[in-house]
Image (tube, helix red, strand yellow):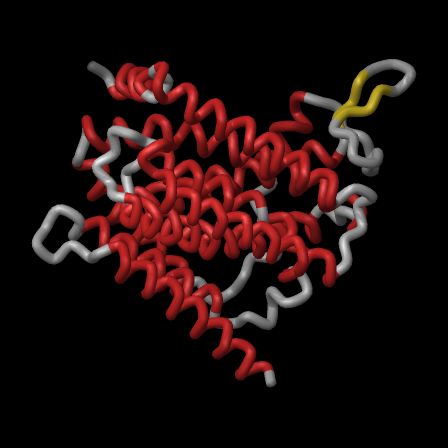
Length: 325
């Protein structure tokens, strides 16, 4: 059976009747939370105080979901091999891992907005489209990835090497590129006519003669493409923590939901957290090593991974603040 056929089969297996109820319920919850996120960013202008408040709200919501896993994991996944405690620790670790790795997305989002001169008032909507695209792409990758790792176990080690290599490259990269690849923009411009300036939040704009794309479409496309590239790191990384598909999906959803608010908290501070990038590189290498050792007698417990993430990220933030003081 080919890799493509196995991918399709993997997705079908996660759509069995008993799974449909769980994933259907969680899909409705996700849609409701996205609607809340849209409502709280209405008007386009987001103050630092408001962004901090909503960032804390999303983290608190993830914590509440972790409590629900601890209390009702048997209802979430009756046939899981995880105990309630194991499932809770896996979710918290996965959430913190995805949240940590998503910080690097914020650096890239800042570059995209600067490169295309996106007005502040339009940035929340651009991020919204990016988050929705990320949720869809990651759900597909997670559904396929869980089964593929069972069928092709060697992929786990391939992902591990990829993460270690990415972490090393990340650590060695000293200068931040001030521009991103123009190829997505060139592709859009070759297929569609693009207006000279932004037309509010519209992706397309109708003139008296024809429909035209707006620069917002290019910005959203760039965000979506970059998130898919980041998912190639983060999805394999969280599979090193757990291969329980629902936990992987939930951790990604809750990490992404607060990404917009977190961006507005950090956009004025990105240049100040000078040790965040080395910390993220260190985390990638650690997770890659964990994946390599997962089936050996030296397998790293999930609780150790959780402690490692907290210590590394906290140390990086404190060290950055101390250096800037």
